Amino acid sequence: MAAEKETVKKEIETAVDQAREDLIQLSHSIHDNPELGFQEHKAVEFISSFLGKYGIQTESGYCGIPTALKAERKIGTGGPVIAFLAEYDALPGIGHGCGHNVIAACGAGAFLGLLKVMEQNQIAGEVKLIGTPAEEGGAGKAILLERGGFEGVDFALMMHPTGGGEKYNYINRGGRASSSLEVSFTGKAAHSSVPALGINALNAVISVFNQIDMLRPVFEVQDNVNGVILEGGVAANIIPELARAEFCVRAETKKRLLELVELIKGCIRRAESLTGAKASIKERPVYAERYPCLPVCMAFQGNMERLGIKMCLPEPGKLFGSSDIGNVSIKIPAIHDYLSITDDESIRAHSAQYAAAAVLPQADEICVKGAKGLAMTGLDLLLDERLRQDAKAYHQSVIPDYYKAGC
Ligand SMILES: [Zn+2]
Ligand SMILES: [Zn+2]
Image (cartoon, rainbow, N blue to C red; front, side, top):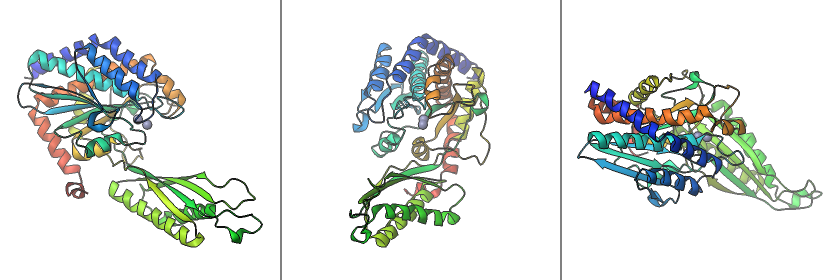
């Protein structure tokens, strides 16, 4: 079987190489037409026509989300269900500053490559491509999960581009839980010469900031609250009637995150009673912390190594950002490993420079190699029952019990 697997991996390389130009074109088309979360209609169209060229039909509007997408094929009977995930949303103002065009190309290429060798060799199992919109702020994967979009999936595989060279090619990188909430205070305008006639909404916002700062000594190491004032009045000679602020909250777990959100809501209630301004709160979706599935990450690392790309584990204790893959990783063994698209350490994600790098030859090469590595990892899961068992056992061992109870 081992020798056979090696042969099939070579076939994956050939299959992805044959689609090389189309994959790079897919990445560039998405990149050159940046669309914000839930508006990625062109991206969905580009992926659909890419797969259509290879005779694969896609379903857009998956789970009732217009810019979610699914393609799937089942070969033989039985076997696991492997899903490759594709993101394709851009950032306001800077386009593909998170390089999601590369994720889309890797996911679509992996789906195509694995499907081809499953067909050629009659390998039983099911392979899916799930296009997940709005990673940047809309938590598309969390919504898909709620609507059953990952039902029946045994393993979810994706990559994410990074920068700075090989030493940032992390496998098994975690991510904190995050969310944000926006508060609007409505007071009463008055002439600033007679402030007692008004209700100062800006004072309420300032009070929330001050109360949060007073609470910082009780924060845990991974707790992180950052706020901005979105609106704080119109002129200094008017008592502000309306003031708005937004707070981004991060914590080690979703459980802790929800506690922090409650703390902030307590600050808002006290600000209301101090000032008389009335608050209304908008809560954004919760991005859960991430539980990468180490055995599958290691299989991916091995496959990337054979393609000439070294990957490593991140330093322990480092603070990282968040993604909606966390929500998926709680339910299903999942990987979200990082491949650098530029050696320049000064180029950081979420910048215009990073967006420019996301279509340079190095990024194009990652579209191809990432697709191969993901497809090979899918193959490992299809052929290696021991890896599947290890992955499922590992997943069970790292997910806290309160999630298993349905929290
Ligand atoms: Zn991002
Ligand atoms: Zn991203």
